[in-house]
Image (tube, rainbow, N blue to C red; front, side, top):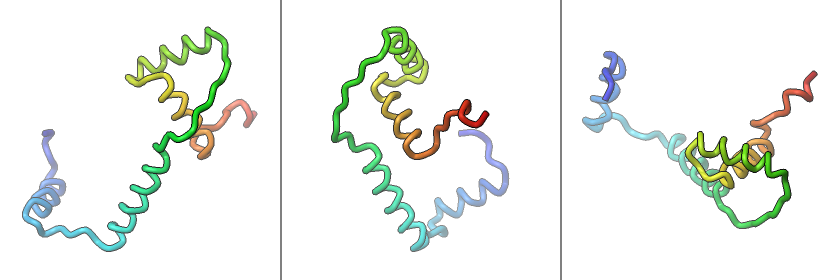
Length: 93
């Protein structure tokens, strides 16, 4: 473990001694985030797409660099685009 500053050590000590408690709002947020994560990662549909072999090789190379299967990378890119987390920079010109 890396060195903790005094504030971080104080928090860790309080957590380990049981002095910190999870608030009701935090419990609700955790439950909501869990539901969203489950819905996000549920893979219940299949698609087939055609793309150039060059694009496929590039996707596979990028996925390899990220340490994931290329299908997972494609799914992640599509998900981020749909959620508005991924935008086309050229559209803003």
